[in-house]
Length: 113
Image (tube, rainbow, N blue to C red):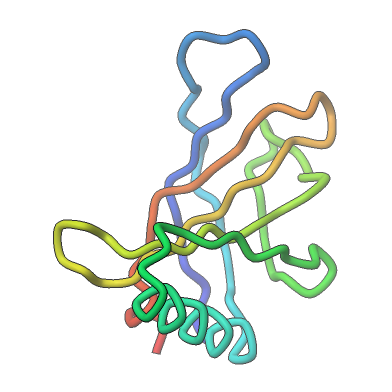
């Protein structure tokens, strides 16, 4: 798998608006890609709006911008877009320093292959 460069945002506790982050670099393993596809298929069948996958930070090849620093937790939010009915995912986590919300733009699951 190739490394993806995603846009990201960081929302400090109590802040009205998020701060744009420099690029987030993410590499999804083949096993994670297969899991994302399975979850997307499950969402299509169940008509559930979304699913959250816990991600082990030790197994995820993730490079956060220096201004953000490391994350203390990380999930991949998988959902089916109502506009094109395709499966998408994005990174959601919390900054270790202050538990601020951090998230990325979405990527279509089928773009991983």
